[in-house]
Image (cartoon, rainbow, N blue to C red; front, side, top):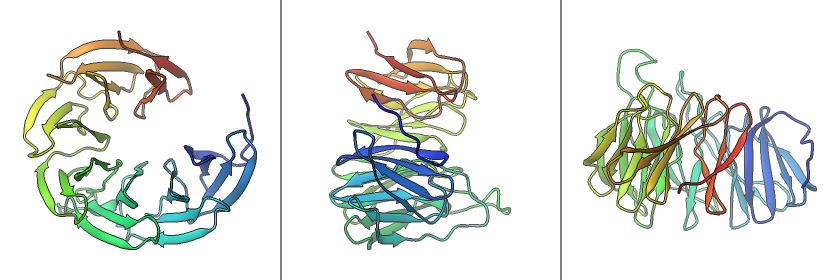
Length: 291
């Protein structure tokens, strides 16, 4: 339909909303295009953009590699507020994003911090620590939140690398439950369950109210399994060889498998027109469905 040259190497994108199409660059560039491809504005943020910018209520929320969140005006890209987080000496390079609900931005950071920030003003509503750093070396003490938080009307949940998974009350940040279960891939919250891909590649389902185990699938161990996506009665995950797997949400059993182009599926599939859109590391796009 259209193609444009952003003028920089794109490191994150594409964010879409409120008539904007957003892409970020490796040197802090952020460009906003109209839905017809016309450039609306360009700006620079503090460092490399590593995740898709989110848009809500006239504000663009963009996250950068230096642990900062910026709130920008959708009309011209001017900064409205800035949230800064102290970065430990050693962190995991992360493409973690943010979740926005009821005028609040929820984001996880290095050293296991989870924060709720006002979308309109950038004021911190509450902060908590999902997982305290443990160990004697800087490597052992990495407990970064490397995936986006997930939430519903009552709770927000996050998981830390080499740490824990925990759920908190949405309004006050009060701890509902936590358990040792590390992940660097991500989680999905759907109906009564929280679905998690752990650091070994196994996929688990836990009760969203208590954190108790429901089932675990070990068939994808060491396959660099992606974060799960809930689609109908199934969970969809990708792996490092480009296979797309469908697991039963009821018991975690393998229901279907599809091979793509042989390169890794790193990001969670997205729903599109009743099916799923899948992108591989080599740049192939697939539209698939389950029968």
